[in-house]
Length: 182
Image 1 (spheres, rainbow, N blue to C red):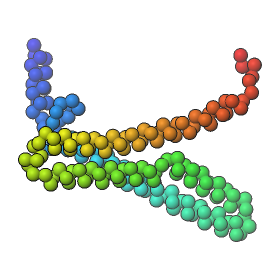
Image 2: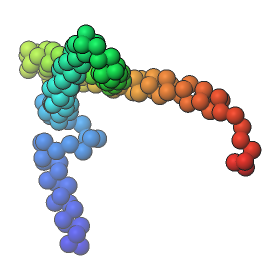
Image 3: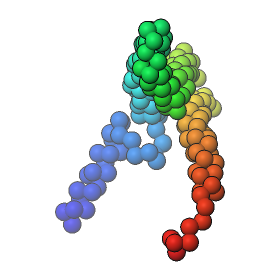
Image 4: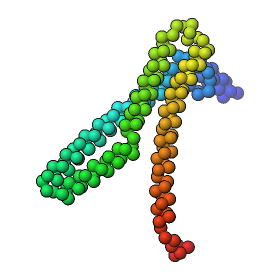
């Protein structure tokens, strides 16, 4: 009997708590903006400086590597120049695979679009903000931005896997059959 009372009290606290999100219950637009939009925006804003730093570090490394290769080639140290060129090429390939530029662009676009939607919402009158159609538009516009970014991320991963699959298939087709494995 005592645990039943505790669960009722817990349910009342949960229902009365304005900043609590159970991911199923309807909420007011301001709660939606605080619980969903601000958290998602913080996620993108937190990641953006890391990717920008990675991009800047890679560009600096590539410039230093390129200049070092040129200087070593001019000093007739062809073997060292080849090493620097190979490392620079590997970093370039990794940079392209990592997709830092694309992530920076996507995250910046999400931040800009969400800021624009929030500004639009704040400029509405209280009467307009209480309209069901306007609230639906707010949610639909925000979720559309998040969905589009997530879809771009998923399609990029599928594309990378599809590009890797032909390589794996080609390697297995090139190997001769070995009867000793049976």
